[in-house]
Amino acid sequence: MTPTTPEQALAELYAGNRRFVGGAPRHPNQDADHRTAVADGQHPFAVIVGCSDSRLAAEIIFDRGLGDLFVVRTAGHTVGPEVLGSVEYAVTVLGTPLIVVLGHDSCGAVQAARDVATTGTPPPGHLGAVVDAVVPSLQRAAEQGVTSIDEIVDIHIAHTVEALLANSAVLADHVTAGRCAVVGMSYRLSAGEVRTVTTVPAGEPAVPGQTASATPAVTG
Ligand SMILES: [Zn+2]
Image 1 (cartoon, rainbow, N blue to C red):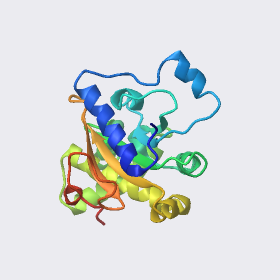
Image 2: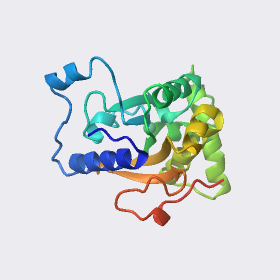
Image 3: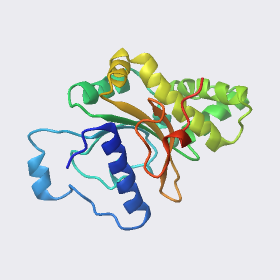
């Protein structure tokens, strides 16, 4: 059954990721019959706002298929107007109950932003827009004395969750009304597993395998 609540959707993503990590994916909803069944309409149960990194393919790492995930990916999961509009479409028109911000260790966009901050050399072309979107996360990391790239990635994931809600009254209203939740997740490239970094509302939806209190809230 297709998940209809944030809790069910998160549990389904974790279940699929466990299958993927364990080397026993089921590849659900990828057959011709299902392709035909969803041709007339889609009801994805999660929006994935992920990094474009080629090793972070959402349907593969969550072991899902056609019609399951509404995926928006940019380098460093940076959030601009087109991304916000796409997420709002999924939540308001398609009724998707869960938004996941998906980052990962060794993120090249975060590393590139840090290199720019270190050298002071601006990147060529439009890469500057990606770097600019990561800079606030670097500043927050510096304020907290965080220097490791993977800890900075966690901060950037939490920052992206905040940016979605701060820049979209539509999304914030849906979360306040309990129709939707936002979860920040980090993926480990070598192990293939995801871990929850933050949830909004704090502690909801409950993360499978964790107690609600073990889930850190977004901090300022
Ligand atoms: Zn990345």
